[in-house]
Amino acid sequence: MNNSIKRTLLVTLSVCLICSLFVSITAVSLRSTQETNKLNDQRIKILEAAKIYDPTTSIEDQFDNLEIKFLDFETGFISSEFQSFDIDKYDQIKALRFAELSSPVPQSEDIAIIKNRENVGKVYLVMQNDNISKIVLPIRGYGLWGTLYGYIAIENDLNTVVGIEFYEHKETPGLGGEVDNPSWKNSWAGKQIYNNNDEVYLSVLKGVVPKDDPEFIYRIDGLSGATLTSNGITNMIKYWFGESGYSKFLANLNNES
Image (tube, rainbow, N blue to C red; front, side):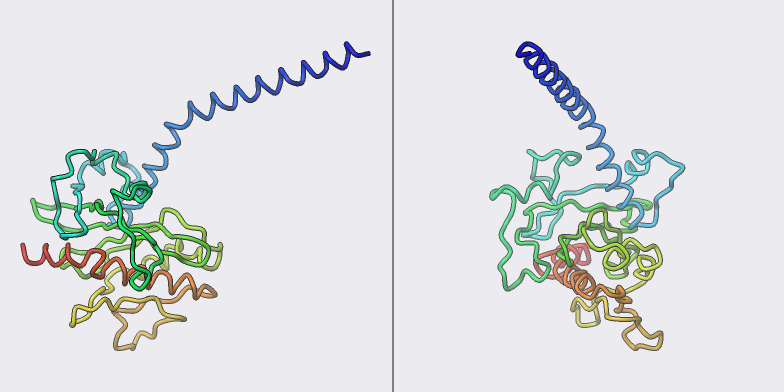
């Protein structure tokens, strides 16, 4: 009887160990594929934000047509000084884990609730005849349940929105999750970020923006039943196009042009 119990336990333990080993090996072997799929998903969102994604062409070939640059947020200049960074492997979100690669955002300025901002960002330039045609900029900010991560593309006038895409968020399906609704995303095209006084004026309102609203060009329809998500996106835009975000970079580009 004791031998039977021991044998049963031994067989059970052996099966558990074999299964654990199999799962571990599978997880490790798939890690590279998972990372590649995650990267490609983000690349598609970048291309979609710029309205240049072609599903019939490989993502790698399309991405090769973009110029990716390092942005020094402190100066607002594109920089080639970061020799220790690999442009393809540098992850500005992972950089937030390291004090030497990021800076705390003062609570009084942290309207997007990001807590830390990377010192070095990446910007994506769509080129045409050696000139910048569009610019795709990473953005993020807190909604209702967590941080939304995405990209916004602007025209070379440095003010007109081309498109917006989110590649990760925790918003409620059917409510805040409507940030993935193609109709809502398309409503961003042609909107203006800054007003005539160079203030960040683009915002997501509660309800539908009337067509005759004199500030229609600065207004986005709200997400029904998702006021906090709508407010979070407004704050996200105000932060990233303000002094701590891309305003210095855009001003420098404007001066250079």
